[in-house]
Structure formats: C-alpha cells, structure tokens
Length: 152
Image (cartoon, rainbow, N blue to C red):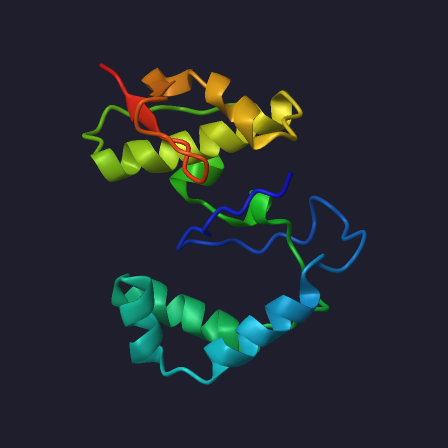
C-alpha cells in the first residue's frame, strides 16, 4: 500500500546516518513539482505554506538550491513535524496545550506507524486502528473515506 503524508514545514538534511541506496521512486513527478515551485515567488510560497517568514525563507532557499540527485535524506529522518515524530519508536509527550489539529497530526503519524508495524496492504484493515484514543466510525465512513473519531 502507498501512504502519502504531507511533509512538515521544518526539515533537516542528514546525509551521514543512512547512505543513499537509490534515487527517489517518484523522481519524474518530483522534478515536475520542483519546477513549478521554482517558478513561484517566495511570497506566493509563504501564502501556500501558511508559515512564518523564517520558515518561508528557509524553505524557499532549499527549493532554489535543491538537487534531486545529491544530498538526499529519507523523509522519515528529514521532517520534524508531529506526524513524523509519531512514526518514530520513541515519542516524548511534553506537557503543553494540544490543539485538535495537533491531535490529527499525531494520529496521522501513529496511523502510518501502525500500518507499517502490522504490514497492512488492504486499506480496509486500517479500521482496526485504535491508538491515541481514536476509534473507527462505521456509521459515517463510506467506500472512499474511512473516518475515525478521537474519544476522551
């Protein structure tokens, strides 16, 4: 099964931990997206990303300098976002207020981790996901959308 997870706004480049074995699988599509991004202004990208000036500048610079054949880092190691943190085996929960959006990001990462741990290939098998207080809602799910609700 292919899982698409939106990237986090913060990213690290780490070419030391894991040696690159191959080029990205979707390299042709990535080149097309990168070409589009390079044609956008920094202001337009900041509006698209809905981020602050510092993150916009940092990522705009990354796009300008990006080389899809060198300095490659796997996304799981690159992104600092909450969803990616919840894919990791060790997660520390800090005592700060968490918004509904944050819970959703945590759930996405935890769900990807659950799917990997359970080797899920059939999308229907994700209905058994029950971590972080989320439960499958058959009554509001349909053939194209599987809905979970956070309880408690």
